[in-house]
Length: 252
Length: 252
DNA sequence: CGGAAAGTTGACGCGGGTCAAGGAATGTGG
DNA sequence: CCACATTCCTTGACCCGCGTCAACTTTCCG
Image (tube, rainbow over all chains, first blue to last red):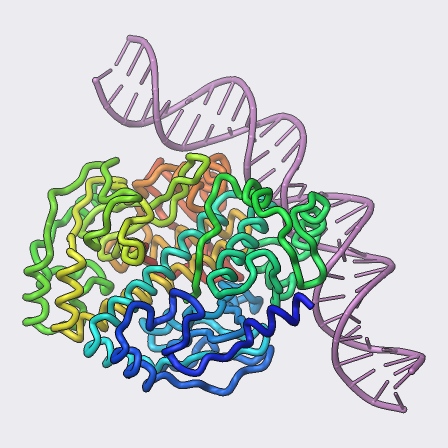
């Protein structure tokens, strides 16, 4: 039931930039009606993707930025050794694709973790529109700054702490961002596998599993497969003490 | 002698954006003369800072971005527990301060690791100039994208590898970036303490020390306090196998 | 010259990675 | 509908990499 609920919420489809307010991060924030209208015209709405499909792959020619409308994706890279490194989980209202601008090619992969709909922002158009609408450009820089700032915070989290702090920080971070999307901050459906979580946090999958069990034993969480309920938010926060990983984040 | 050499090179002062080509990353790259002239007018050159002085501190009102002209700085944050987390080391031609745009305040500290001169780019002026010069705006986005992309790569490095891989990756990364600044790629003067290196890499200071000794024993490096000479670049690269940490990087 | 800060080296113990086995959920073909 | 395979997750046992503690050396700076 929790899952259904959240999926339905995440699955709510918005139809234009007017009523798109999935998160403060999204572009129209603080823009006037005329501006939003223009932005609305360049935005494309590709058909929703199914779990396991890519929005883009590393090496693809960079053409567009993407804002998540509903669902969730992960960004990852492959190492020379061939194995995967999860870089980020991206929620509705957050932006992906920024890492492709400088080289003209995407440097990471974006993969749907569940049914996913995105807004596509062709970069040429966006660039042009930024010249017309100074407000948009400022907003772009603010978003980009936020991405960098979120990267920094997640680096704080991983800097020098043990597995408990990491997982706790990760959950708190998700909780905050879920809330920003209008979802529950305590009942989280995690569409990614334990594998992905471990990979992202730099922990073995077994460790992640054990920690979920431990947190449950300590009455911080209730865990039911990929549905988790935070029952003691402040207890979880105490675990992260010594770092500050509970802020909004976005990817590449 | 190595130290003197490098310090002198890093210490070479440029006087305007015309002949400022410390690194490809810097703003004038790919701009026409008129554009550079305008940019040159808004750039300020504060007096050089001494070791231990701050360019800005977390909480300071955000007014400007800074490009390093010569020297090196570290960016760091303080955790709630009061201890420090090093986020990045920033070299000539690289940009700091981007993390302050979104909140209007700097979220990290920037501290000179040696005598440091910077270019100050008042953000309001820069923003305005971006409207006049589309080329500048594009370049800004490219730089920002590069910062994000570099963050991503460093995350790959820290993702899931042991201490040897981390330190080797770190040294290769620095080597590449030193070369971009026109410095030697093999003779590196590291102005930061072992403490800073360990903090940045998520390793204990003792581990860093032991690894330097180990790498020296394996004839990969010659270590003389803060001066290190890479004697076997490919050997060092083999260590990092399984990740890709040898690309250019810049900080917030 | 003395005191502090930075770096090195050794001994030890634990957190978490690795290996292995088993359970639960989902899919597939008959 | 069931039998079977596959994927995902959990739990236990073991062990090693690296953090911690401690002692010592070297460098720096007044």
